[in-house]
Length: 392
Image (cartoon, rainbow, N blue to C red; front, side):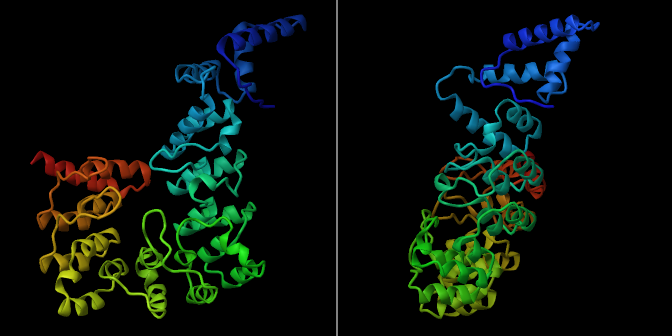
């Protein structure tokens, strides 16, 4: 049977334990060596060898875990980084030593908020890590207050990670109003709403609930319940903007919102990939149709033809976003691993050495970071292309 190392385990304690085991064996008349006892002890704690177990203990000691103030917090933060990078060897070793880390809350390894390992595994699309965490005891419901009330299931649904979503539901992840909206399950939404108006405020992320709607019926139902479409999330997006960030999938939803008197902005048309509407707009408001905001939006959502059309009509290839890191359009294309748009922007004169305002990093740097954070292999091609330009 495999056991768990105690929290205060150290190499001296392990040596004494191995010697004690050897004494017991010899008292039983067994012909054994200390190395045999050490190997058996390591195997009993889930390690492949004494050396592997000792290295794990030493690593914790070197990182200041033993007796250090705030060691639990440090351990959680470090474990979240291991999950985010998909380091399965380190993940397994850490959980052997500290099983409680599977549900620890810590600083996000890549951006703000305090998620759990399961949140990070979903966001980085690491299915093997995700399944291992659940097998190791991760709570499918999640502790979500430190992560703006986004549950692991909500994250999986919003990213259209069907396999992860199904596993979470099968494991018993609760389905409330937010999850039902993201599932586009109008029947389940009605079941949730039948519990009373209080459910509209329970465990809801910042922003408008309408931002999570995925059917016209859900929009109509929420508007009927006087849910405001104007409430902005912590990034400043109202429901219209959030729904436009679904890209082409959001067209019918944005138009449904427009029927309630909400204006569709040029950048929202660009996110939706609605070229016909942009062309119509350009006849009366050309500056709006290919504004910086509209170009960045089209780049963000990979609308190649729209990007080329905008640039051909005078759009700025060095357009910058007005929020967050204030990245340039080329940063966005590099982050997305969209080599075609990267090349389109470069041909149009985009500055490959431009720095975003928050991280002071180039598009090349963004492609490298995105490869780790988003687990997107397409970023490797972008990195190779931009690296080649640096050598010219």
